[in-house]
Image (cartoon, rainbow, N blue to C red; front, side, top):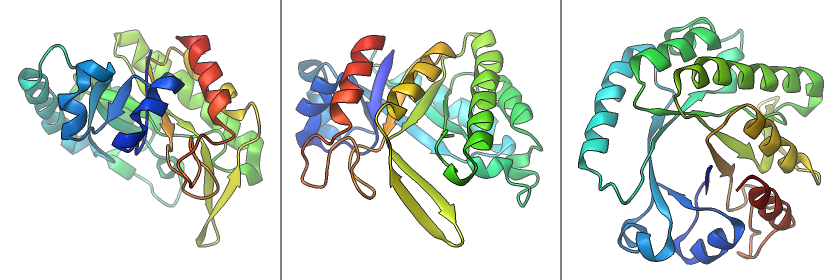
Length: 230
């Protein structure tokens, strides 16, 4: 199981290691040069929201990246395979498909060298909690059935900053104790091969660390569950 987080500054890599993070998303030059020293692997994101028509080019790009990278620095190529608005009836045909299932099937066929990364949270819509949780678990089943059946490793984001969009504005709330652990256990049970915590630095409130750059109240919970799945 690889573990990363979004937006980790170089000076926080020590904290990242303490937390069980072993992969750096979109690392800067200092990380690459010190990769072996820190035992951190470099991960390259190639983008997200890629329509079906763009998947063949993505596949070629993934193969080229894999060709030029050294074998001692693992660098999976990640693409967010879905966004919540794919489920929005106001966006029919989003990304060139009418359903999540169709998009995943085509992703697996047209870009098997890419690593799909689920970008769908159980706490995205807390005004309709049961509906949001039902869709989250549906998404996990799809990822397991479509990518897992093809032996394609898939990753997923773990929601640390709970946010949603209501009436033209972003709304935030702090996650309760146990809600991060719940997500990780659900993802592991579904066969997820890698986790990304969103986000390291606070969007609002706290992230993995707080606004002062110190471990937030989520830090110990994340550390504990990371040790559990190591």
